Length: 116
Length: 110
Image (cartoon, rainbow over all chains, first blue to last red; front, side, top):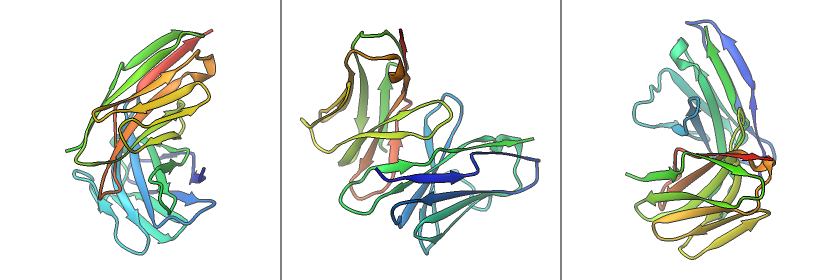
């Protein structure tokens, strides 16, 4: 299956600062990547769909000015959490779909963000 | 709005004790139903895609089946390493979005 990586795997930042998370497709080109958020013992909630070369599409209730998404190349999408607050602490996971006839998404290992 | 409900929320099994997980869904035209396995602190790992009612897929001790309203993930003679959270998701035709269920946490005791 396709391989997706994320960096960093965990990050601690102070309230009010910004943090960037990278998502890379390692062995395929992904025109579309997805960003999810997961709270403890809960399922994945889609935050936004990242499209290469165009603006991201955000889900209802997700602040686009707070969660900045950039998909500058076919193998890299970034999520920047701006002016982070403790309530932004969560597990952020990206996924990508390998182009072709299959529709499954392959997920990265996730990034644990803790805002102090 | 697409909805996915998984049951039970948690399942404790003895090693070798077979069982089934349920995923009920409503979707406006199913493109695909997906099963993932997630270990604590990690991203979901893809298991199966099912596209149409009657379809079945197998991988080692896991078998996934699909009807028009639900999917089952059967775990046959589970081992402790099968302990994980199993997630079900659906994708509607015409869209990219996956809608996930709440997951079933499976614990297999030796």
